[in-house]
Length: 170
Image (cartoon, rainbow, N blue to C red; front, top):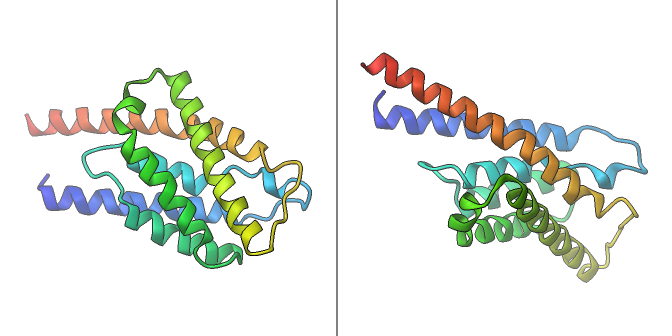
């Protein structure tokens, strides 16, 4: 496969995963547990940031945050700021995150999601729109569990696809 086709295929996969994450975020949930929803778009962005050769950038996180803010009816830019912060933190700590065992990776994802939720809360509090329920802290935990369910099977699929590609080339 030629390099430009590989990049195009990668961006097609990323955009499809982002659309799936956005669709999941748009699903209606009961009013009481809406805050406990795992942030699937953040999980997809984390997967994209942690996977070379074409890692997602801060710009992609900003655009995804704008789309999520517009979709959920929040103040435009709050989600973007938090996604940019999350992607930046993961870019800074990329090497240790990759080397950690799976349990520690889940813990780091939980802390990253917790920082992202704290950023959202601080922005909403500063704008006078803080609507936090008792389920709000469950979201980072569920996101870390969902991320583990997304990240490892996708890595396995990528390895299988790469092995098939090597067999075809030989």
